[in-house]
Structures are given as structure tokens and as C-alpha cells.
Length: 59
Image (cartoon, rainbow, N blue to C red; front, top):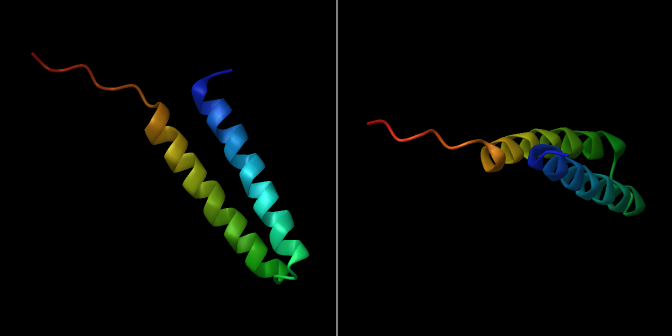
């Protein structure tokens, strides 16, 4: 598995845990959905920036 995939899998586990916690705290379902969408986008952006290859220095 690539570093990108591993990062995203871990991030999705965190998102699922937060969603279940919010559900158990009786947060409205609409706001749980909004939070999940925002966190998925943030996870993709973070995973991409942390696992992207560095550009070689120009000579």
C-alpha cells in the first residue's frame, strides 16, 4: 500500500469515529453529513500534500 492510501485509510477511520460520536451525542444528521464531507476533503488535501514527491532542484 502506498503512503497516500495508508494516510487516507487512517483519516477515514478517524472520520467514522467522529461521525459515530456525533451521532451518539444527538447531533442532527444533516450536520454530521456536512462535517464528514468537509473532513473528507481536508483529508484528501492533507494526504496529497504530505505524500507528494518533491520537485527536483533546477540547475
